[in-house]
Structures are given as C-alpha cells and as structure tokens.
Image 1: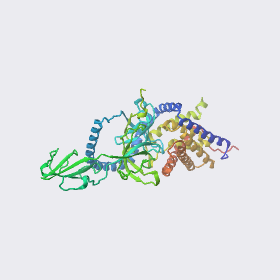
Image 2: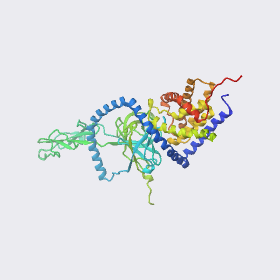
Image 3: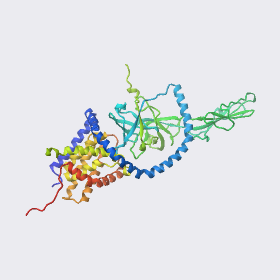
Image 4: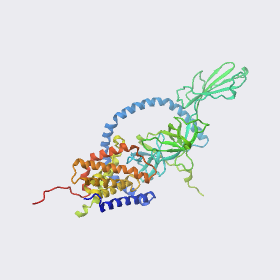
Length: 371
Length: 174
C-alpha cells in the first residue's frame, strides 16, 4: 500500500479543515457550542461519578506511595514555619485592625459576597494552568469572577456551567491583571528640624528598626528625643509600663524621665508605601508570574525583594483592589525603556488548593445604572 | 441490526465517554514526573495501528472533539491534535506489514508524541499564550512511555471501536 494516496490526503485535509472550522466558530463565540458543552457535561456526569468511585482507592494508593515522604518533610518544615510566623502574625494583626478601623471610619470597607467552592479537578492537559470547582452559574458564579484562597489571589473564572466552573490560574500565560507593588519603607535615619540636639527647644527624630518580637518588615521604632526647659518637663505613659518595655499592642509604651529631657520610644506599624501600578501576568507553570510595565521612581528608591504585590482595582478591573497576590522575589533589570520585571512569589499555594472562594464582584463599568 | 451495532461511531462514543471519565478522575490527578498522562491520546494512536491513517485520523478527531467538549478547550483544538496523532501513528505503521508487538508500542508512542507536540503549536495560533515549549523535554518522554505502556490494553479496545477483526494469517489452500 503506498504511503501517499488520494484517500489519505483527503483524510488529513478533511481533518484540518473540520478542526479549523470548529475552532473559528468556537473562538468567535457560539451559543450552540456552549449548549453542546453543557449537554455533554450532563451526559458525562454519571460516567465521572462511577469513575470517581473506582478511582478513589487508586488515587489514594498512588498519593500514599508517591507523596508520603514529601508530605512528612513538608509537615516538619511547616511546623517550624508556623512557629516563626506566630510572632509576625500578632504584629500583622495589629496593623490589620488599625487598617480596618481607618477604612470603616472613612466608609471604605466593602464586603463582597463570596461563594465557597471545592476544587474537584486540575488541568486536563500539560499546557494549561486551570482548575475545576464544584460551583457554577446556579450558585451565582459567572465568567470573569475573581477566585481567591485564604492566602491570596488564585485566578479567575473562564468557563461557568450550571454546577461547575473552570478557573484559570494566575500562572497561566493567558492571565493578566492590573496590580500594584507596595513596600515598607527601608530603614533610614531621618533628621527633622535641623538635626540639632542643643538645649534650645529643638527636637531630633530618628527612625530606625529595633527588635520587638515582630517581623522587621512590619514594625519600626521611632525614637524621639526632646530637650525641654526644666520648667516645662512633662511625661505620659498610656500603658503605665516601666522603662524599656514594649507594649504588645504596638502603641506608645516607654518613657524615660529626668529633669531636663523626655525620651519616648514609639513602636508604630509602618504603612506599606504604594509605588507603582503595572500588569501582573502568568508565564506558565514552570516560571514565576511577573509584574511588567513598572518604572522605578526615584522618590521611592529601587524595587526590592519582599515588596508586596496586590491587585490595583480600578473601574475596569475584574478584581477589587487590595487582594494579596504575593511578594517580589526577584527583580530583573531590562535594558531600555522596558523597565524592570518583578518576579512574584505567589501567596496562594496553587499546587495544593482544596477550597477557594469566588468573589461576586462587579467592576464599576459593568454596574447597571438607572439612567 | 448487527450491522448497525458494528458501526464505529456507536462504539467510539460510549468508549470515549468512559475514557474521558477515567482521564478526568484518575489521570488528571496523578502526575508522574509532573506530567498529566494522556490516555485518550494514547487510544487514538493505538486504534490507528490497526485501523490505518484515515481511520486513525477519524477516531482521533472524534475523541479530540469529545475531549474539547469535556474539558472546556476551544472546540477543534484537541480534535486536530488527536487526529494528527492517529494519522501519524497509522502512517508510520505502514513501514511493516505485520509489525512485532514491540514495534507497535513504538508506533503508539510516536503517534502520541506527535499529538502532544501538536497541542502547543495549535495553541500558539488559537490563543495568546505563546509558545511554551520549555517543558516539552519532560512532557514528551513521559507521554511516549505512558502511551507505550498502555498500548497493549488500548490496541484491542481501539480495534473493537473501529470494528476491525484481528489479522490472522493462514496458509493458502492448495
């Protein structure tokens, strides 16, 4: 039988043309195909249920054999990490309370309705970064909705069926979202008021970090030394604590007194400094997501490892502002006007997602108006 | 009635549904060497060993479209890739009239590899994900080996789907 024959040529041509036709129709958006997908999912559902029953012991055995040593190691590492994080968490909680209080005072607190969903499947192939969740349009999930985990941003809904949805992960090369990078100000000695410490009533302020049981990035210590005339000496100590103590609430605590001077040590949570807005884009499963279209602003200094990346929000963004994406793990300098590329270590662990939440957030531009 | 039941399409669809379910529930969650094993693709290539290039392309296309419907991929993307896998597996099986069993495994592995390789190429055209070939060096060997391992089971299944009787050689009557 000849390798090249008319039938064979016809078969391959027919295959290519049929596929291209289907692709063209589908990519242009075809409700008929969407209905076909939904119907196919219904037909497939009993098969999947049966396969799930059969496959569960196989899956468990596989994970038991393959993953057990890794899980044991990971568990030990996580215990250490948990102990280290506990101190940082207390300080961070104080910051969050302050932030929420301020936001509430300014009417900025918005709680978006959420749908909690279970992750029921991973990516079907080797070239997609998607997961499947067990909630769909019947639960209020819609295409474009942001998906988060307790740690941070996970991705967005790209397909929503009645009772299941497909989430494109933030690592997928087709995912992009507006984001901003923020940083806690670097340790610096700042002298205010001429830097004189003579007994003429002027003051000197020094900002620097000190160990306080909290993470270095979360807390800093402001030491103010004020030289006052003898007749006007006064001190206050809100916590009533003794010298040298640092309050757990991060408030004013230490006051040293003598006849002529007052030294106040105030532990103040530093507010992250917003720097630049750019685009956070996935780059495939084997590469870290990166933030592009940012330029270094001399006013804030260079980008650094540990800078926090959050969603920027905005009238057209599908995600509300302030969702944690991750932290900068690497700053790649690029020549010309391209600006640096910030590689992001994601806060959410996308390899071990069990439950996620779908935010029912609507961008301002899509909110229906009465007019 | 028997002729109707022997029509390949009536066999491919239920087998395809079962294979989709198995792919979804089993292989989507087990990642040997970090790679998702593609059993449906291996079935396309295995069926083509008995059925030839034309029927391999046909079964690949049908199973690929079912895959697209099942996994929310652009319709026709896997249809084309799996069709190519079947076509190539059927075409290269022509190099031997009655190949040894191990040669058949190699043909299945090669066909599956071509199908998996075609996917990122097609995705480059149909989406803006760009070429992501960095992982191919790890993905393709795993796909090839897993397809070859599953081939002894999948070849009879593919033959049944295409309603082909196994070839038997008999001495010509004197």
